[in-house]
Image 1 (spheres, helix red, strand yellow):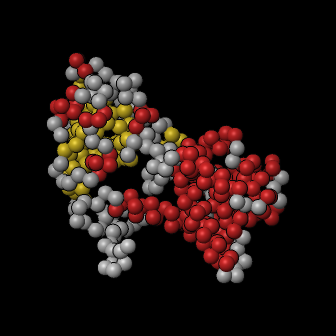
Image 2 (cartoon, protein in one colour):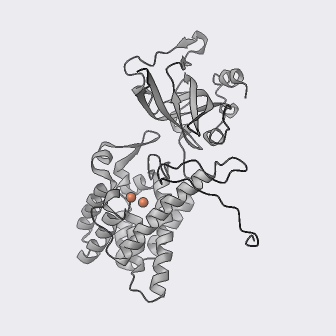
Image 3 (cartoon, protein in one colour):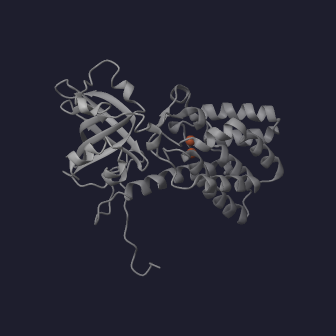
Length: 357
Ligand SMILES: [Fe+2]
Ligand SMILES: [Fe+2]
């Protein structure tokens, strides 16, 4: 892409002449790119010579990309393009004020220790009314109507006691917040409606595992598994906010979504007058759903229902990371870059001969 042409088109609000984050993630080393997006995170760091550089995560409708802004990068003010004003990133409050703002970026793919790395070389502060930040927020690839329909089908498939409680729980403001919330800030389903998409993935998987074991004679309560899956991450409503990219809230940082979720669930169950044994069983699933203490669960899953929900939650997260990692593999490559959230590289293996449809 011609850099001058693409940046000139910023004045005319022509987003289509830019790359999107999905294109950029697929670029090979040395390739240049131009992108417009919203600042999801920007963190100052120091290099070996004690010069400040920044880690920047930029988001658009297609996802997020991480890159480095080195000390020699140039910052332009495009709110008055004819003035050609250069901005000083060291000015107090400038960098922290960029959070949630729209930026134009020109950069290049570099290589660092065998991994590709994005360098953001020129940054353009944009007229925020021309490029409203909420226009760059990533959403679930599944239409919201489909997600909502499936959610209520799951609820209505439960027996009366659980169904009535779930209908009461997922109503009013809680439902409005739940259907919008992201499931994470990075790692997985970190976009609008991501929590609903992840919740359904976990519930679908957990229900089929529960059906399998119940069908082979084990004493597993399928409705309890469904209800536990639907509420397991309810605390993420309070732990994350969209401003407009997903961010951790203060309660999210200092209390985490499991504690916040259990507090919300207890409050609602109390007001509803939920049967004590159901309250205990669902509370146990919610508290133990991360499967072990190192990952934030205060108790380990101790019932078949809790074991199933914890297993489905982990699987949904890891499979998301697999899809996300292999979707950006270069032509001819079969092993992904290192995935930090799951601590591995993923392998997109070729179909074994004779097993293809
Ligand atoms: Fe969780
Ligand atoms: Fe989860």
